Amino acid sequence: MEWEWYSDVNTCRLFIHMILKANWKDGNFRGEKVPRGSFVSSIHKLSEETSLTEREVRTVISHLKMTGEVTSRSTNKFTVFSIKNYEVYQSNDMQIETQETGNRHSNDIQETSSRHSNDILTTTIEEGKKRKKERMKEGNIDCTEPEKSAPVPAVIELALNDKTFYPITQRDIDDWTELYPAVNVIQELRKMKGWCDSNPTKRKTSRGIKRFITSWLAREQDKGGTKVYGEKNKETESESSVRLW
Image 1 (tube, helix red, strand yellow):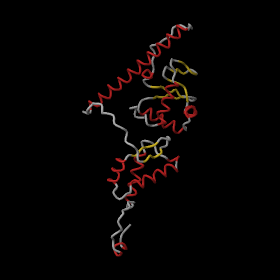
Image 2 (image 1 turned 180 degrees about the horizontal axis):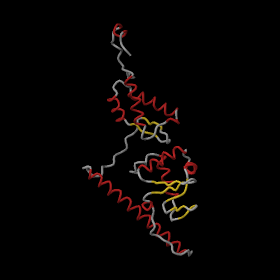
Image 3 (image 1 turned 90 degrees about the vertical axis):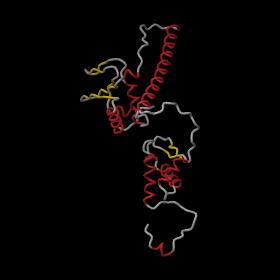
Image 4 (image 1 turned 120 degrees about the vertical axis):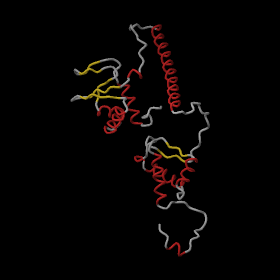
């Protein structure tokens, strides 16, 4: 979950799909060697298999190449995609040397597979904790695990493009009220909620929603704000007549 593309729905989805498609042993395809951890495909084929557009597939592949998860080698008719560090995602210490059947053989396989899966899970968790502590130590950050507290309730939620919701807490509202004093923040958030509900194809991503909110509030601040006060305006008629809006 600490992977930098984890929150990018398209990139995360296609990368998992590519790991599942990769060959588990060396092979050949039309004279081309396709080693373990690689597979033959195309942009069009990956688009059909994942329901992403071809443009989205190209964008995702550029992400994965940029950060070193995937490489590719193209011919005139197809492309060989390769998962870098493929062995990291796989296990190969359980090998079945015979094709014998029977209850004992089946039970042995299930027991070994279950034990191996548990070993992998435990190792992964421990390695993750170790890496996290090392990174925090390098940054001179206290590694003490914080106590878990009750989740802060959301005052309002904005719909995102992946059909989830971005929660906004009272603390967020207080911070924005301080940053944009001329704006009625809660009123503008209600407007944003209505906009997101009415424009499902234009909803923001989890990474872009905060910039969308602050840009909206900044525009309102620049326009003079929307804050409504209970007191009557104490300006005189002559002052009001020359006020610039």
